[in-house]
Length: 444
Image 1: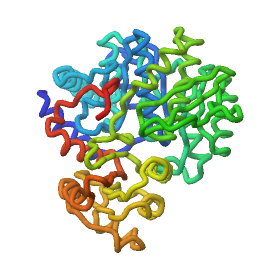
Image 2: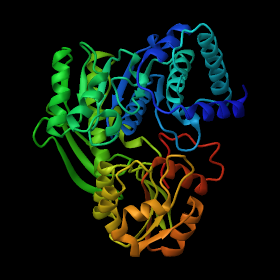
Image 3: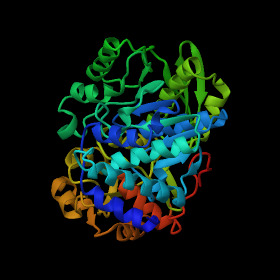
Image 4: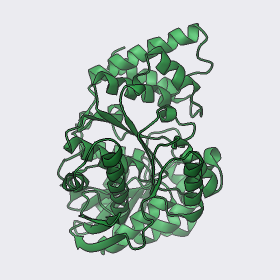
């Protein structure tokens, strides 16, 4: 298949939806000689923050000279964003070659009745990541877990370290109604004897993860266990400088990714780096801090322009909305125009109650995805804010309306989904089909 044929193939299988279980992935990986077993891995799960922690860790390891693979999801603009070696995305040629090989293997396995169910979009991309990293001879790979943990396609590996960032109420249809049930699914990445870094602060979820670690004799490290270990020291431009103490050692840093929640994500990455240092290869404190301060992770409180100030954020659940609200209240003191779009299965009423009160105008729109809520649906579910809501049929129109309603001395913020972020970034960067490297890139 050429590149365009690959995209069409992925579009076809994306309609298969979500399937939990590891059988398909293991069968396909066995057929290609188990590339995932050829290098050490780090698994990162959680409701929010896992992509940022993966980005921090990849940057830290890369700065230490280790050839590091990074697999994340979803992508913003191009599917190749999911597969990186350090700063570099997989090439279109390599992507098409590896996907063609995997498709051929899948067809062979189906003909031999070795695959009992169709392979899903996420499963095949996970296998592609494993194969790509092996062929690139990575020294280590950082893997972002998908929706859950226990039955996630990435969970076929035995990592050198498991990381769980945060737990909040999301995807209850698949993961369970209570935070304890969701935490149990996320804790499925914990392996016997393998250390687990836990950034979770909610008590029920924390205790669920700690109990599972004890059952598997996995050393448990609570990132925020020590009282007063994490503090904001001072404001630095659009962000804070933070102090984090881990095992009596102080770390002072100003992340290049904005928000207090990113200071906490950085603390998780620092604690993880200390464990990596003890269990795998020695990492230097100054290089760890350098990594935290030079990591770029698009779509997370990212400034796209300064006149007017235009910030995009992927906040798509209540926890993310609260983090965004806190940032706006602490750093943005002037009126804002909000562009909002999300999936129709999200808790739109709750998210609206958190962030809509901050906006003088709310432009509800829709991105190009079959699960997206319509602008009219968002309005119906956020009726109390109807006097401030404007409907836009598509993202381009929403951006035009935002500029019209926000003079150069005001602020435009988008939130609700990373899919929305991706479409806005295409508008700002028309050449987005050839995206820049993300980590280490200076902001505007």
